[in-house]
Image (cartoon, rainbow, N blue to C red; front, top):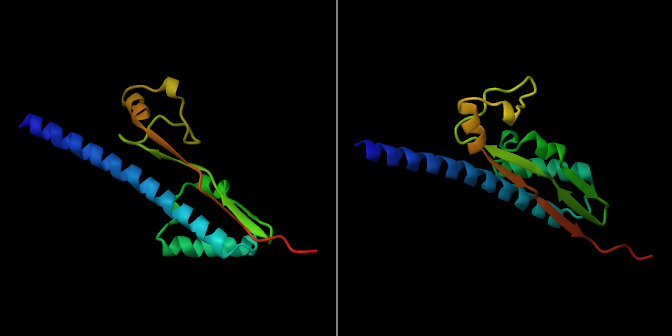
Length: 144
């Protein structure tokens, strides 16, 4: 009986972490598709129009602001020249397999060298994923 419970718990743990990782990659895939769509369909638009359309596309694709970390919006770059557009961002997603580390300071940071007890294992079991969605399009330069 104990063996069966152990294997069930291990399988559940693996499935849960796999689902969290798959969700992060799926969200990034939707963001990448959105960037590519915007760069291809709005190559001559300005930054404000692209940003407004991006918010609309995110809602259509069921991407909430909470699905993406604040670093996504901090690193978001829309370079619209009128002859093409370049859209990029960079962000990290952390999967906390055993829950978040509890020994954090006021800013929510912690020093891995000063962790004790279960926090050491939580830190070692975390999974960090980095994403860099990017798309570019260009319209021919004007003559003259």
